[in-house]
Image (cartoon, rainbow, N blue to C red):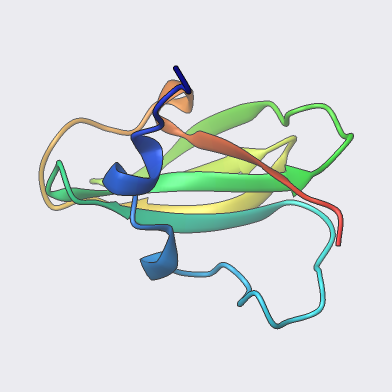
Length: 101
């Protein structure tokens, strides 16, 4: 029996903010994005990295109040402000390997 994957049903990748469209030339380097989750009332932070590279080390820096900055290998890739809920942690970040074009 073939494995079933629920990620495409849960994460709405077509609605992700900050990802390049499929028709665009492939970008290289680290890129941050917000991906809606239809099972939760929250967007998830995703970091896209190049195929063949090691997954980046994710760190989170508290800026002020509910504002946090997300870093991938020391490069700022997102700023998050949550109206409610806990502060984001590195384990909350989805790591996505970019395929070669």
